[in-house]
Image (tube, rainbow, N blue to C red; front, top):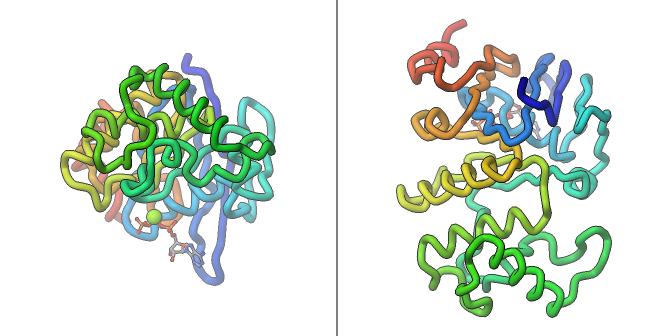
Length: 242
Ligand SMILES: Nc1ncnc2c1ncn2[C@@H]1O[C@H](COP(=O)(O)OP(=O)(O)OP(=O)(O)O)[C@@H](O)[C@H]1O
Ligand SMILES: [Mg+2]
C-alpha cells in the first residue's frame, strides 16, 4: 500500500457564478508524481492554490500527514512543507546561484532572517549534496551548463525542505531542452521521497513522468488512475465529453 501524505476531501470553491471546484476528493502518496490534467478553466490552478494556502476552500478539508490543515497564507503552507512553484519560475537566469536557491524566500526561513553568509553556506551544502560542488556560487545562472542549471533548480526546491511540491505548467514557455530539464528535476524530487502534483497541457510529458493521472472537468474529478492504464486518447475524451 502506498503511503498517503496529502488528502483533499470534498473540496469546493466558487468565484462569483463560477463553480471552479466541485467536491474534489483525492490523495497524494509519499514520493508520488501526480499528473493533474484538464481543459482550460477545469480548476487545476485553483486546486493547487487551495493546497498552497492562496485560496481557502468554501467547503472541504485538506489533511497533511493525517492532520487537518487550514492555511491562512502561502507562508503557513510553505512552513508546513508545501512549496508551490509558478510557471517559468524554476530559475531566474540573471540572478546568481545563491539568490536562485533562495528565490522568494530571502526574507525568512523558519522565521529567521537569513544573512548572505548563511545563505552561501547553506547553498554550498545543498549543491554539494546534489553533486554540484563545482558550481561557482557567484555565477549568473544563464552562464551555467544545462546540467548545472538543473542542479541549481533542484537545490532551490530542496532549500525549503518540502514534503509536497506543486508545479503549475512549469514548462509552458520553455524550449524543448529546458522542458526536459524540468522533467528531470521532477523525477529527482520523487526519487528523494518528495511528492509532486504536476499540472501540464503537454500530455506526453505528464504521462511519461507521472505515477497516476488525475483529470478534472469543470471543477469535478473525472478520474484518478495509474498512468500506465491511461492513454492520451482517454484524457482527451475525458476532457471534452459531457
Ligand atoms: N481569482 C479568481 N477570480 C474569479 N474567477 C476565477 C479566479 N481564479 C479562477 N477563476 C475561474 O475559475 C475557473 C477555474 O480556473 P483555473 O485557473 O483553476 O483553471 P485551470 O484548470 O488552471 O485552467 P488553465 O488550464 O487555463 O490554466 C475558471 O473559470 C476561472 O475563470
Ligand atoms: Mg491554470
